[in-house]
Image (cartoon, rainbow, N blue to C red; front, side):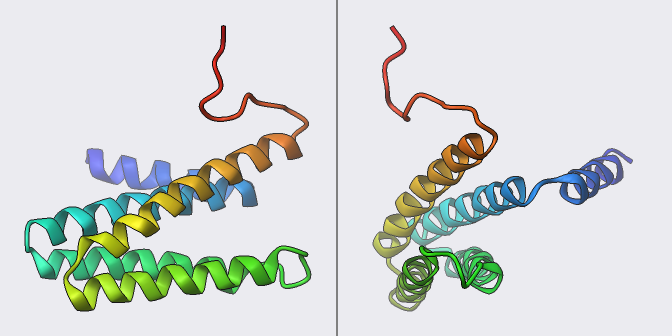
Length: 134
């Protein structure tokens, strides 16, 4: 019962989200799956590692498919996404956490960048990540 309510909540959240919010939700998912993949690699649980790393690749592919090709940054982002997928495949094939950890770091930075961009698009300026508040 609780799971059904949670699923309905998530469905409503996704259906009412702005494009920026959807992008950030996808980043959250990619980060979560990448962390799980790294952890599974470190624990030599290669089946779980593969499952999670493929989920990250699927999300990154979604980023590539939905990017506005007319945006000035599109070609740079596409190259970055291609690099992410290359490193995730490398992590999966070599059973090495290091390439996936690198992608994880980039995904976290990317999410922070998208969050800043979403705030700026709303006309809200936020302190840079890591800035002191005092």
